[in-house]
Length: 559
Image 1 (cartoon, rainbow, N blue to C red):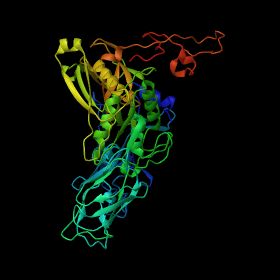
Image 2 (cartoon, helix red, strand yellow):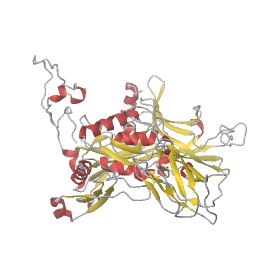
Image 3 (cartoon, rainbow, N blue to C red):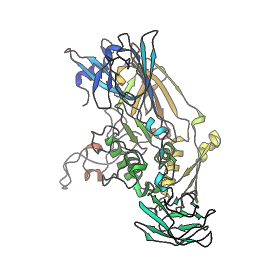
Image 4 (tube, rainbow, N blue to C red):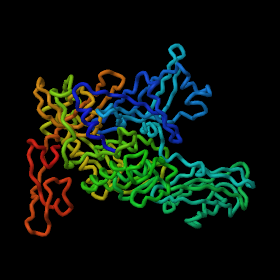
């Protein structure tokens, strides 16, 4: 639920409000206990949105609790943690107020999973170290090679040879069981084996000592004889599993299926679900792991661009963080944990709607500084990518047979050539996914960004990274400067509570978008129209609406 009017009033109050911090312990079974009376310090949260290419960064925080009464001594029968598997249980941080009517109201500010408990008997304190949901991704692998893909020799085999590693092929290999049976005994070069799949049927024979490769079925291996020759009936069995793979799929939907193991469009389990994550796949706002609404918006934004329907796959033992970052690089996007502890997805494309709020030195901004650095400029870009959709066996690298170069001559003249290079293992028929990414990246980062760091108070409780805000500061001459929240740090154990932010204004922040339109009925059968694009119907959006940057806020987003 959104905060009440009274809560917002307390947020905006310059002095005299009564902020309160609530700390909750939530077991894996969902039982919630208020542990605020034992809270001493900590609960300091920080989120960072990396600069191009945006990267995934997990967050962590500590909670220091009084343990004078053994409340958190897990070996005491009276302890909250007695007999409880608290590793992976949640700590939820809330911030709120005593409202004018005497009631209390709170807003969730952060959720972490307990990773470590540290005791301090000298001071009777316990520290709980917590990490957010993104830590489940940081050191994980996608498509760890399944054990059953290893060839298993039959228990009655006479020949003592072996079978090499089973190599598979994306977009060819399917989930099926295989039986290899000796049909002609002998040594290498003589013995043969039938090759029969539960779906592919018979695709043999395979000759011992010679590599067997079947591209259509997506398997490759070699049977090798030992000191005792093969005899009729000797056998090997194994299973193969489809690679996590996507054919012409929206990049946001790909990220959803990686995290949940479910197909976005059909809401059915993927054939390779056991090889990726199993976050909650509920496609409503009730999803406890993922911010479903942010995925809906991101997928819609990607569809608006129309060039990010990708084809690609995850090979064996792929680093999950690298795989997701490559997708986010194409989108200039972010995957991060929101204040409610759920993972959010955001992509960079121009969208319409007003900025969230303005912070000003006339209100609660207590300190402010800014910087610009050439170190953050990108004006030269080389992207190697998959131009031909030819997918090799898993023991070979994907061929990056395409190259795209993008440079900004004016920026190079001003700052010298400051370049980066990328490797993109995704394919589209047009290659526009790479061109669009390169154009946006250089256009956005061709000039040193304006980074404004400032401290404010409780008025920023609702602000999260990725949002667009304004900042006014008389001393620095900043007048409603707009930008994106790139960092937010909330220190709830300080009095007064301090919330620090970095606002980043890149080259394209000042662009204006507008379109003609009207909110009156012209009698054309497509009225009344709405003067706000976000509230307009699909029909109305065929018209254009103009606005300006003055007050009240315009009907378009200044980006």
